[in-house]
Length: 287
Image 1: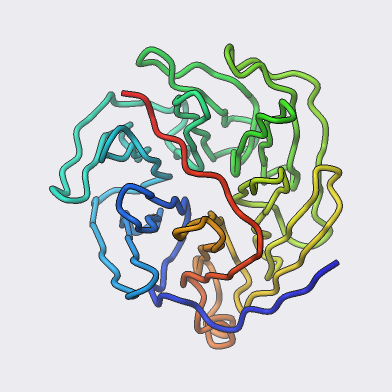
Image 2: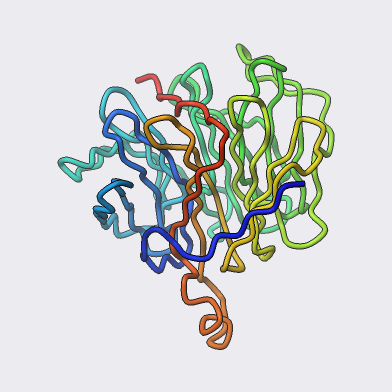
């Protein structure tokens, strides 16, 4: 197993709950959200130029849509958003089954469909796929629907339920979005798997909440690389940069005590690392 230490962040943003990093190849920028503050960030990695966009409501995630837009999953529903105008247009409002529930992690699949999960009371959350302007339930009875990605070469779908402290793997019929043969792919000994992404070789990279680290796992679930971080709560990760070989890692400061914040001054910041592995381009929502 390879071990790497990251000591400092690339961008000081002090997110409460940084999440959903996505590399926008159309602009050459990284975008991510602070769920609790309702803010979208963008960063140009070379110049370190940081822009912030206030949405004034909680944002679970964002993903690329069409030629220049993003799809947002917010407290009130799904929106199309454009950073140049900072305008968002409602796709449709969504009333989740319980007021304590929020949209959480989401991504666009290789066929251009948006998958979105929720978090809330145990076994009350779900993972849905957006089809024909309605949300179709794919996985019910979840606690905290989190990281997700597709391995089209092997026919796998990976999905994290952080409430179960596990990453699950399914066989997938991509055309129908039907899942089968559920198995536990990885269960953390310390901390909880949160966001995840796959590299071009089919390895799974996962952020370990309350674990101070990011792990790279091969398709057998074996740990190839452990990246130690100066923050307790890494949240999610995405490959980006011109060659898609830079790993960007978001983090959180939410619910840390004053003493914990003193020992983690970079909690909530963005981190980056050249990994030697290449990621996959972000999929675009078909409009």
